[in-house]
Length: 507
Image (cartoon, rainbow, N blue to C red):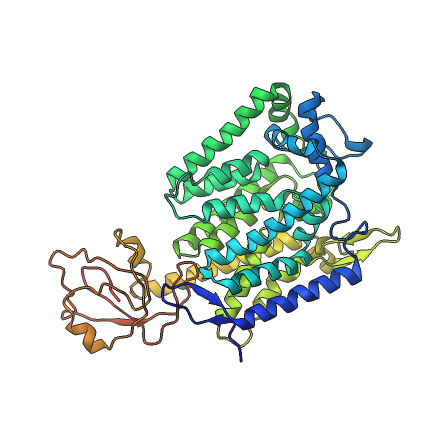
């Protein structure tokens, strides 16, 4: 039977097995057949059959060249205004040089490539490498086109995948990387919601990243004022605060805290203070859980949780704003592949189900797409209309529960593997290998081993005499292997952690 995850080679990188590649190919083939059978590819409701937002971007870029007012025009006499900062219009000038049909094609091609890159970056943040990872990423990107946020992004020609990739690439790099934070600043320049990641960097005390991101974002704002002063003034003093320009607040399409409140409020217009308090509470909870995940070493989960928080606190969040369901899907699949419990594949099903592009055909002939648009009565309809916020709550609860479980284990006095990262500041890259030594051979050593049994690299001992004082007290604990983002190949049979009193634990 082929393996889903192949054994890790020397160096600690994870590898997708042939089983994972075969399953991904099957999923991609099924997705393509489903597209062809149900809604097609180039028909009006097909995967690439619209592109109207790409045309809006093109027209926004053309206003820079023509001098037309950026925030009062209505494309083709329809209710499709330009809702982005002036910097975005400057970035879209290149599209204004293309015909409309060519603009749609270019945006479609770029979005397909960005979808693949988003999946690949997610796997890489989990430590996966190798040729099979590229195969899995390509096929999973095709399969993900049946997730409503992805499908509608492709159908409309939206820029959500660009923002996702900018943040994943930027904050997925090691802390201290050159100009880390530029991607977040540029993403916030296109659309304000990614600015939440600047707060995220501050919460993690990544000061350099926060400063670079804030400076880059400020640069995009300044550029807008320099080139389009009147339009920039109009946006930052008026258009920014008029969320009704985007859509009807109580519409099921508004998958945010404000949308939930509007649908629950008698007149569909909750007081501003109620929304502000609710959004601040959700923002704090989301940030807190993201920091917890990061401290446990789960970087991709931390970024994903922060990304899912942004549409929650936004005044109006269309379903296609929730493209952070892509790395969330990767996380769920990775956990299911590595878990040993019988019902492990229930997890990705539960996580993915709310985001699938379920649809029904209205009497007028329109395809109504999205779980939140399913016309169901009673409690089921209420749950469907708030599908994405409920999915966010589910993920948030899972992360907090995992953190509580980890804390309960630490409360028993068990030494933490995380101390190997937090206390040993001089961890150096070295050839990594997996070893297993008996307790007796470890007790004979007088110095800390240069290589750990988990392939963490060389660790320098900070003790004064450089000796391991296992004679005083020895406590051995098993590792549960639930560390996602440190490229640790676990569980390692027989791996044990020694507790050294008045010092640091060593493997």
